Image (cartoon, rainbow, N blue to C red; front, side, top):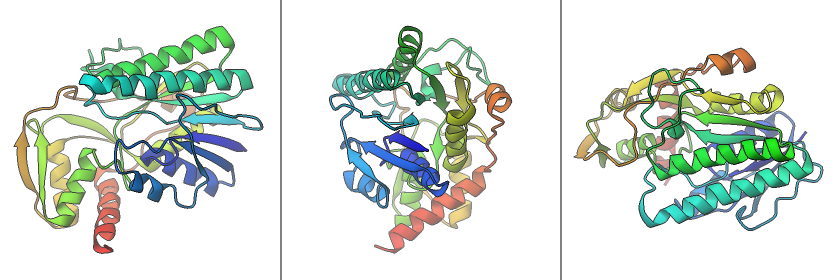
Length: 305
């Protein structure tokens, strides 16, 4: 099969592209290589992949001869208040509209990467897909807007789309602004780590290889027009995760306490009954096992420099 992966030079996109290639597929990657974080890291992620520089907000996405699109490209990060909102609107809403329009025109399926951020501080836990979305960050608002755009193109133009709501993916190559990446870097370099809030906020942490399996399976047999939570395997507080990383690394972390960040939710915990029923998928990697893999990867990179 021939697949397009948007955001192919990013954390999840690069892992997905590698998995598709390993399965014998042809992968066309596209990425804008924005400077949200160090572009050199994205170029490193893209090594060995066919990744074309494309700004989906203005450049056309050619889909002739393509079997489907994994749309992972976009502007990440819940710290999205202020003037940067224009960037989120452009790189999420505008870019996604153009992807959906191109896919509808070409008659190909799209698997769209949404986020647990659309739930905000959810009304109940575990949180099922039918819970009312109440995002508390501009980022979450734009991801929810993308979901609405996908459904509008499905209804108006016959777009075949499956929406996946990701719950805190982690693992090797995680974005450097994310907590686990900052923790393992601080441990490897013996520097301090800034902990936002009291550390008792909890997440459903999802190891990236488990998530990639769900993404591929959604393309193969997800129900058109359906939305699935993709997360779990481990729910833990930040202090639990820090203790686990200290254990797997054999080092102590120098913590610097900071106020809680605006836009960060207190808890995420997915109800995964729907994805288990329809796709037969469940996260299987334990938090200690996944964090050891991330620590080993990060420690080896620091040692090699």
